[in-house]
Image (cartoon, rainbow, N blue to C red):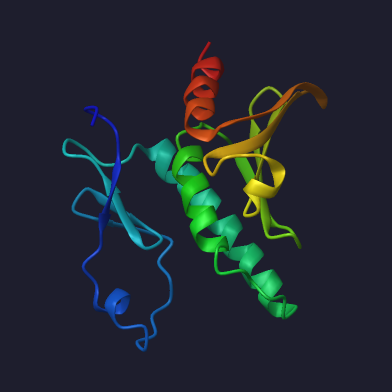
Length: 172
């Protein structure tokens, strides 16, 4: 593992091992330089997440929580894969310095992440739970990148590689 790469540390919490206990989900909480986001502790062995990364994760989790609450209020049946899909994508996207975001859950159990950056840049990422039906692998997403509402690029790509390269592009 690289020096500044983050990893998940399974949280020791009785609520995780006993599903009969009810506890509201934690969006963000700091404990001794380790940040609790969702059901995972994120951190590294030298320092906690940066303020920008915490802000990005908070925006993602907040938007996800609003979408889940909206769908539950309409008695929409949520797939069991939704939470893991959100978790796998958000763990890559929080490293990007976006200003606003929206998370949408579609009727085909796909998710769309819309990230707004400075200078009228917009990134849309779609992740499908039926990726094999689309001829994709589990780690691939569909992205569309816009500047001033004009499509610049759209493709199917590996999410981890894409976010690394896109963050480099944004820092130019």
